[in-house]
Length: 74
Image 1 (cartoon, one colour):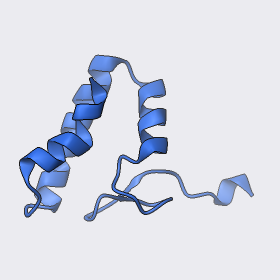
Image 2: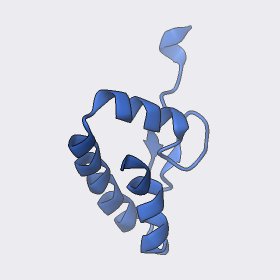
Image 3: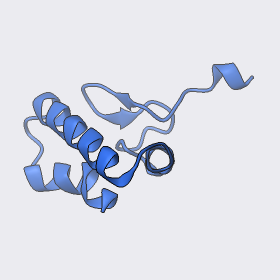
Image 4: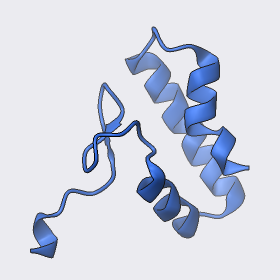
């Protein structure tokens, strides 16, 4: 049933996708976020997420978080 499907959203504090288990934002999440947001709005939204992820995963290198959350938005 469609209502039972899990969306491609982050599970905190791991920031893995709740639907597919890949690091979020996974490809389906990126597609949805790109469709729903303009370029600047998307970058701002993802910057907010990178800040939250950095707090949840302080062991993660900043460069990896940047690549994961922001690089794809350009």
